[in-house]
Amino acid sequence: MTQLALGVDIGGTNSKFGITDREGNVLAQSRINTQGFTDFPGFVKELKMQVNRLHPMDDVVGIGVGAPNANFYEGTIEYPPNLPWKGVSAFADEVERVFDKKCVITNDANAAALGEMTYGKAKGMRDFVVLTVGTGLGSGIVINGDLVYGKHGFAGELGHTLVNANGRKCACGKVGCLETYVSATGIRRTVYKLLADYTDDSVLRSISYDELSTEAVTEAAAKGDKIAIEAFEYTGRILGMKLSDFVEHTDPEAIFLLGGLSKAGDYIFKPAQENMERYLMPLFLNRKIQLQPSGLKDDDAPILGASSLVWKYLAEEETQ
Amino acid sequence: MTQLALGVDIGGTNSKFGITDREGNVLAQSRINTQGFTDFPGFVKELKMQVNRLHPMDDVVGIGVGAPNANFYEGTIEYPPNLPWKGVSAFADEVERVFDKKCVITNDANAAALGEMTYGKAKGMRDFVVLTVGTGLGSGIVINGDLVYGKHGFAGELGHTLVNANGRKCACGKVGCLETYVSATGIRRTVYKLLADYTDDSVLRSISYDELSTEAVTEAAAKGDKIAIEAFEYTGRILGMKLSDFVEHTDPEAIFLLGGLSKAGDYIFKPAQENMERYLMPLFLNRKIQLQPSGLKDDDAPILGASSLVWKYLAEEETQ
Image 1 (cartoon, each protein chain N blue to C red):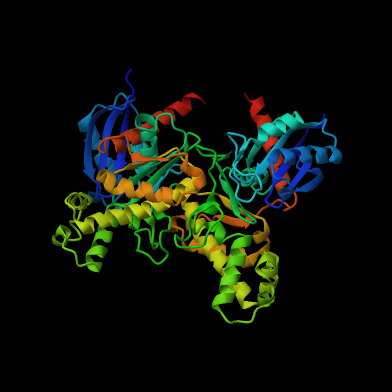
Image 2: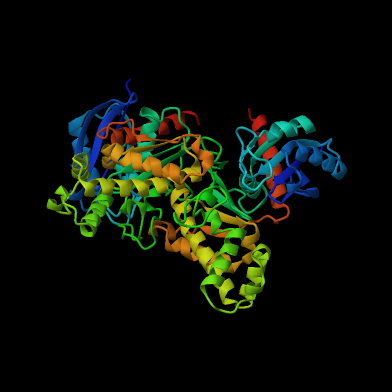
């Protein structure tokens, strides 16, 4: 019997879900508008209906869920700033009740790291970090071959390390967090700051704040737009500085970027790599840390990452 | 037969060594002036002579060494800024050759963390950090019950994470490292900066830079000296800010401080705890992270930590 998994990636705007096999093939996938559901049981009910239409569930041995602020230990989603469900949601329990299958849940960036280790460029690596740079900045950290959850299940909040104590307001309630600079929202804020500070002509002056995308900034940079180029330099500089901190902390073999910002290529990777190395202890410099794009396709990565939770769970059950 | 270990802690000024049993008793100890030896083989030869005088070696089953810039994987000490031996020293090999016993070497702060887990307050903890705050600032990180070495053996360089890109020159070659603010040297630099910036009377004005100790600053603070109190506030504020980064990164159960600065009690712990919590995501605040002094005596800690390496090595051999 072919074993399949249902992988679900819950995002602030859309949630993706798909049926995958152990080899990393996504057999079918679809998406739900997350914001359409004011409570999580309503969302899980809709998910069940859509999955039933998508693919037979007979061979599905478990359900993996990646979600912002998910707690692996508790099976909960706790106070997610970008989801419509407030407080603490007992998400895994509800999925198990509705689907009558085992459900494992973790932070979306942890799921991405697991996906990278199972199907991507981190195969065989024991120490690496995945940064998911979308609306916010998430991170999944692997040390000694295992995901780092920490004492309370909240390790890997690299997006909320401090860049500037007097800096930008963050959705988490703090000020000056890394993700207020390095994310789709972050670069948008940077572009608007630069448009305010400088008088240079820029195609970005014709785009409203709400409509300004990372793709638009990348396109402008490719055409030589000074504001766009400087926005990437600034974003990369801050990312590189904080990457040096992360390397001094856990000394990874590689750091992978996933999500919108990583598609900007050299515009973001070059200043990030340069500034990371600039702020590293000399000790690390002859041991090149690889900063590179994820090996997974953006569309598949979250679903594969979430599915990997199921395979990992089964493997651990078998050895016990 | 009682099994004993030789624990050696190599410091920039003095190196301590002692014979310990598995229960954490230090049966005999002594020290050598590290700076008296221009090469490491000369130091190992002297160590052998002094150990022979200190205690019989028959029951000693192994030698554990904690040293700055030590590489666990390679058995080397690499480019230590504060030791007289330059370049890369194959220290473990030399000790094994001269003593004819197994030698395990690691970063001195990693040894301290292992000692804390074996004999101190971290017994039973699986996720914690030990900061050794002496001349510099070292750190040993335990995640999922294991020391974190990283891909290249250099994880845990928290003392060289970045506080200020335009800040103080560090012995490591970088600028603005945490240890240039939070260490015996760091608080001395802060006191001198404050003495320069302000006109307040202070007993610290009568002490030369070279002679200014953390104890003198602590005594002055206890007498209400404004410069001394502000120096601790400033040091604690920077420590607390960076601690929040460390917590967002790996979500530890506790953080232990060991060494000179930790003896200043509330003068350092209060501002550090307050500022750590100030910069933490709200998510962490109802899961109190304990910031507290190490459970080991300062004199014994480095020797016990180094000895723990031997017990850990033996335990791992037995399970293989």
